Length: 303
Image (cartoon, rainbow, N blue to C red; front, top):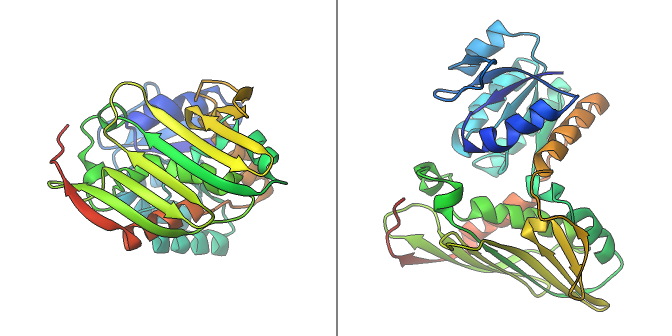
């Protein structure tokens, strides 16, 4: 299938383009970006121009930041294209609901992707927890924003989500593997005094579940989820790519490079089946944290 990729930034270059290029399901037929381009692929500055010039494109994958994404997705759906959304799927829940309704009305596929759910050890972790009672769970998700979003000030602007940009990866895994849903009960959010979104967050959920997100960790990056049950302990390391049971590694690999190929394989499957996949549960937790969170001002942040 012919696919157009919108937003040629770091995540597109690092993950989307290699995944598309390696897949037998897809042909990268066009890109849309104000600055970036992919060698050998026709580039457009505006999605309207691409849609008019390349009617044979069947699918539009959106890898640009959340705030402008709705207008691009709406235009693609109106033009009869299936749409794939980078995480988080939008700046607000309401706009994603609107896209979902339009896709359903037009008989098109809409896929709200959560790449961390495709990590190697997530499926076996879910299977192991299925028949067990969770007594406690804790997320430690600490990384360096300067490494993963160098100079990208938009992450600290309204709608950029701040530390919830990576934190939603953890929440996407949590909502996938827990046998019983949880809801947020409290949150503490640290906002740099010169920024509009949090750089750190501590979350408390029902079911004795907690989370610690921080975007200021230099050196070793920590992406861990630890779960205690009535029948032993589970830990997911490396962002869900390594599974430990009672301290022993039982599944997975330390590589994160399988996540985006799995997303594009899932998108191909959804298009063939004529179905959509729009699970917003990780984004609901983020929204609830911004609603319930106690705000604290911390030191200014600059790249």
